[in-house]
Structures are given as structure tokens and as C-alpha cells.
Length: 81
Image (cartoon, rainbow, N blue to C red; front, top):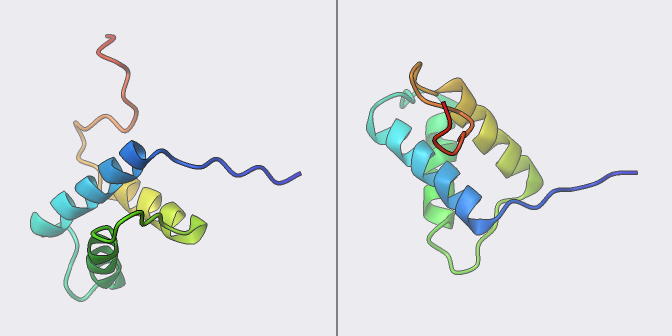
């Protein structure tokens, strides 16, 4: 059985925000395919009711994880130490 978990719009917004931050900080080389991908996602995100495809979502999650800062929490622990 194939179960698909649909992310909330808040989760998508967070991924898009993080990708935009990485792009503006120069973490993604202009020569890298990811640069064009992120620019495309940022543009598409401006459309009303836009949701990424399953493939776009998985690439977005992978890019955010790969480009994470060393001190950045990938999982929000709700402030618990």
C-alpha cells in the first residue's frame, strides 16, 4: 500500500523560505542545477493555491537538508532541551 503524506501549507512555506535564504546567501552556485530549481520554486510559490508535486517536494526537502547550517535544527523540538 502506498501512503502519501501531504505537507501543510506552513511546512511548504518554511521549505520555500529556507530555500530562498540559501539562494540569497549564495549557498547555491549559479552554475548548479539547484539554482534554477529554487528560482522556479520561488516563482511558482507566488501562484495562488500552488502546491509542489511529490517530486518537487522531495527535492526541496533534500536541498534544505543538504544546505543546512551546522547549528541549524532540522527538526523543531518545540524548545525542549
